[in-house]
Length: 101
Image (tube, rainbow, N blue to C red; front, side, top):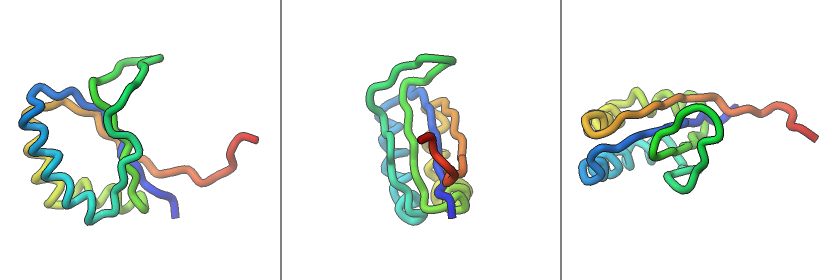
């Protein structure tokens, strides 16, 4: 079964308040088996637009990624984040097909 991923780009206007969101999202991320592949760090915008912070979060399945976002626990965390940030978040299914040789 393919893994699921959150691809997140975010601009933060209140870093101190955003820390409360980070603390609040830990429980739902743990519950749904999330693992950060990218969390901040250096980046180059080589095409299109960007935001100040980027994250890629891996889940054991696409269904777990979707369920996490819709869970009451994550929705409570989201209510903390939304007033202090602007984000783009896409949930995508992983690819398990052939790779370039």
